[in-house]
Image (tube, rainbow, N blue to C red; front, side, top):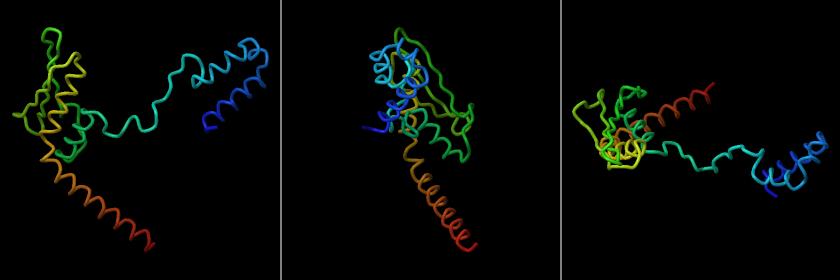
Length: 157
């Protein structure tokens, strides 16, 4: 059995040992079903491992891109989304007042405002990819150099 199954079996045994009346009242089949669902009834399961990746969505990638371009953490005012409803669709445009106030990136129409913002962020990320790639490589090289120096200092100490 997996680690999870073993943990659930142990939890079930502990519940039955600590609260035999409650376990009997719930019933063995209900108790087994509860643990088969991953915990107490009504609990939300965690995401599968690897389901959420770092910088996984378009808006996160855009924030990371702008952080590299600005050379500092991104503020709320650094990325501005303007979303408008047109009929049943939403159109979103993203601008960067601190980086390039004249540039704006419009996404494809989407059924929700959130999806429209994601689309605009994806368009902007793709547009800035060529500018960001060399800066990111430079940043990685600088960080590797710093890590190497820190490691050498630790070895000397």
